[in-house]
Length: 207
Image (cartoon, rainbow, N blue to C red; front, side, top):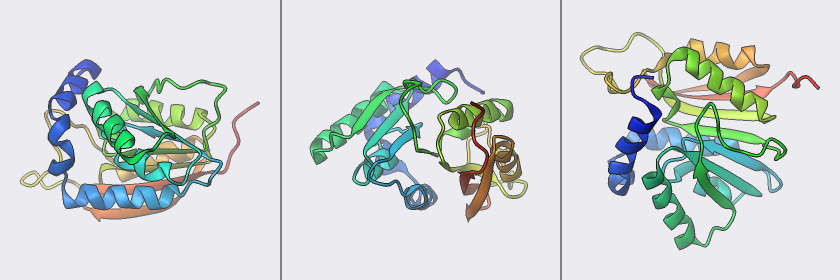
């Protein structure tokens, strides 16, 4: 991670009010696909990591039993809470949580994990640890939308900010999911540097 958790939290809190209006077409396309692939049922609990202002969490709340929205930025979560209140959504819970410590009750079952445009802030070994934590929630499906390289990025046109971001290759992410007992059932290419990865559990957690 190129900045500390606290530094990232402060950076996002500072731009929380204008965050939704600043997103690219690729971000919007990615979010839409994450929502479509997550496809929770009425009895499902969804864990949305790096939830930000709630683009994924609020959309899924209409279909899921409950959405646990986790982020490190209080400013971003305040925006999400306000949007949930404005829409009358009472099934979304915004609370502090990190990728490697999402702050959820170990006895509370999670069925689907989602994340969009957040994991790329971690170094590759930290991403692997985060995916292990996602697996340990017991979720049957993980849907990740993120900055990730299909090929070497064009140094003249990076889709990310090298000073704060540390994207992985798509292959690295796929390998991390398969190592945790998931089959990658879809890889959507939004951009040479943006992907949506869908992973379905094929190996149960040890008892």
